[in-house]
Image (cartoon, rainbow, N blue to C red; front, side, top):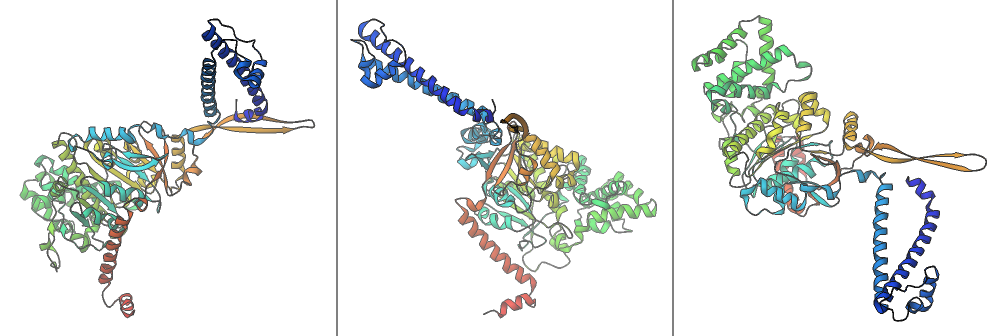
Length: 607
């Protein structure tokens, strides 16, 4: 029966229910009186059945229905017991009927708190103990990374999950996901961002628990450079049989920044091969990234000489063949390689990937030291280590270096996991905010499938599904979506095709349809049930900033409330550290403008 029919039949059903309840109560009184007589006299002598029983009970009390010698306590005990049982059965029946007739409520079709399983509570803690058996007693915050709450039950991402977060701009992505995750990471955390807010909100508190490194070539946070990283070390340190693959992996991060109309299939592949061989030449000859940029210039044969000297004849011959080709073709191939490494023409960025003794201008303060990424992981074994990687998108971006850095850190994490019996302890957490713009790791969809099992928790954060398609292609983005065991979709998503797809994953529910017809004598209504999306695309687009849709493997889709840092118990401490960091940032930015800048002069004129 549909809810509409139930509403129209309410009055007759209420009357029938009253009559049935009265009759049932009369039967209860009759049975209780019979039981009382049997107990008191040894004979079953109930009063005559009928409505008169209730009138007699109301008028004269138990004496009006009990035979002589019947036990009054037994009468009341039996009557109260039977009535209580019948009321309980009635309540259960009403709830079941209500669940059936209320199935049109879309919230009933979403993930409920009782269905969370090992995403919450003791089950989540038990799962954490199995995944981190060597950590001793685990505290409440050690059960995983908290994502949101469903019906006031906290939902945790476990230490074998990887996540994909899709939220539009200014949708609490940083405040509710990135900041809490960075602060909660138990060991090494890698965080990328194109703004200073994530760094400002987390670096101070993380510094209390361990070392913090910040990569900031574009002066987003105006952090002084104290270290540099050699991308070629991964090639030089690799097994001789794997050095070409290591060089190709590094080259892919640079060539991957070429997109749109600049991408030509032939020149793209040939340029990547040239860059691979040039990187290999620099690594084998103890060269630097400056040598790579130099050897890609027209007429340069330094890479060929370095490869020949190192005994890499095949790669040297490959470069020789490219240089000996048609002039137009050779120029196109090398121009593609130069375009891929265009970011390195910035001296500011080059200083972060080359030794100080090769800089155009000597360091004015203490020379930065080389950061060995193995030392980075070693530091996380004894405390909480943090590395912030900052880069803007567009012209002058440091995205190729950020991508190479993150990929190498995660590659080392995999090697350490294998050497540790399969899983890292403590886990490595990577928060890849603005991943499509500043950290587009080419192989990320393929790597995602086994990161979680290694104790590497990666959260890839995008502004839209299509943004991921633009980086990894339709198949690659679908692979990334499928490999992510936890998916969060929040506010600000305007991709209609994606929202339609998400609505289909959430599923349908039944809604009531009412059609009314009127003729001369009467009005009639017809009720029917139809299927509609639980959350249509319009509802998904209208999700508020403090909510997100949760998709977790093996469960219904849920809708939960986010936990932005400014609503947490330690928000005052976080805010205080952020205020200090931002104040220093403003002072550093003002110094960078110079004393003759009109803005600084105006500030100096203030009383």
